[in-house]
Image (tube, rainbow, N blue to C red):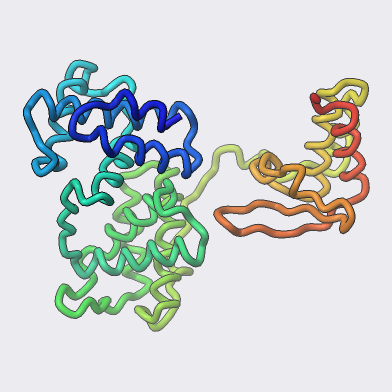
Length: 309
């Protein structure tokens, strides 16, 4: 797909289009993703021709100039353009040495400590570096550590439980309950990291106060066994949908999995001979669990009589 689209690219970037298409294909990008990336490369090359720009003059400002007019015409948003398209094109051209490498500013003492915290979250907690969770952890860490780290030595100032409580009270005055709950999780994670890495001599995680959440407190945290059994029994096993629902509900109720974990299960994850199933967690955190007989029977019934061919 990418190699075929490379024929449509003309101008100074034409010799590199086929290689870009092959790289996208090797990464397993979908047809639509490849088409959008190649379209941006084509427009960038044509833009350079219109302005008589050679390869030696290619830099991030050229790409910004290309995107500026369409962004303005589309009310500040290019209709087909995706930010990841720009990142992929720039990364490819930089890899070929055609575009200058960005100047990385020197990190401050606080930013270096926060970078260590993010590395810990990715390495030990299995979070994706570009995930929303890591975004909030980083934001909370920057806010809490501001003014608490020596800019020369990078040493963390001595902290007490009172410092933690005062920070929480100050921040929670100006945020919603949900933001406050996110703040609690983020600050506890940061304090735990600081203790484990030796930046603090004691774990202050317990000093983070909880944020009250009174709404919906009357709802049960779990279904009583009788109610769960009645829900399972309500599935119509005479239909394909009923067999599918029964299989899903059996996995949920008997194995205690989350909905997202059930959705990730594939046929290859079930070891029928060993009676086990692989549960795909965050990132590469997988776990083998025993497959109860009644759960396996429900899955087999759906596969044989309900799953489309």
